[in-house]
Length: 161
Image (cartoon, rainbow, N blue to C red; front, side, top):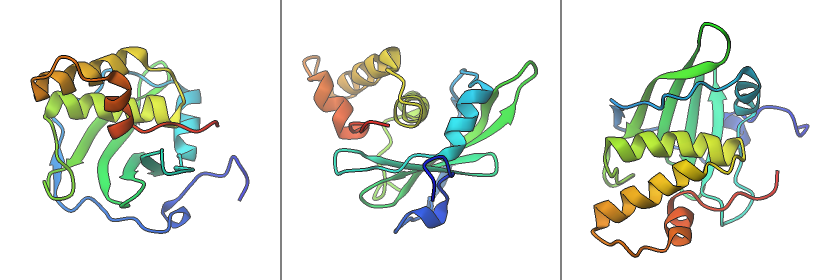
């Protein structure tokens, strides 16, 4: 497989589909460029234990699985928009609390966008990262959570491209 060949379901050793999909009522507003979509379609494979996500695309659906367990967490359907680019038109998250503990709709909306932006596209996504830490702190009732620990625990570290 060449470096630019898209990852597929068969590219991963162990994948488990979302067992109990719950529609996300809040979706990211972002419109990804056609160039972003080309990159997203190639997917992303975790390269070491510090990376948390494996991502691939089937048709217009981006599937996001945790790298260690292979469990599906998010699926996002993309559609073209007038003027170019694509946006998420619908998405689901794993609702089975034994497989994934959701922290609410706002958190899942942010995580969906953050995984695509930071992990797949390798963007700094500073605003999204800050939002992740703020939502996590608010949910935990602790204002002094180390941002690096919060980010690493759910997002992981992205190895060089």
